[in-house]
Image 1 (cartoon, rainbow, N blue to C red):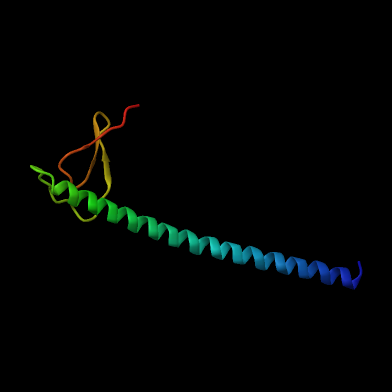
Image 2: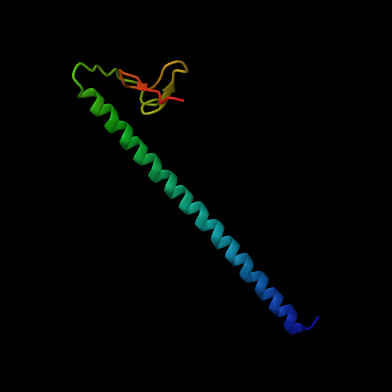
Length: 94
């Protein structure tokens, strides 16, 4: 194998490794940013839902532990309810 061919192959391998590293770093950074954005949006939406439900006439909203606020609880027979809410959400038909 000639010197020119070895230099070409080494250069191609170096570029491939650099592109792979850059792609992996970009993937990790964008994934983390998207997760953070989606989590923030869901927390905001859950908070707005609980506040809107509290404003309904006759609604009583029990406070919930901070660690469970905004998570869903599944009652397998009837409905899905949101921790911190008084009324369960209706389940969609199957």
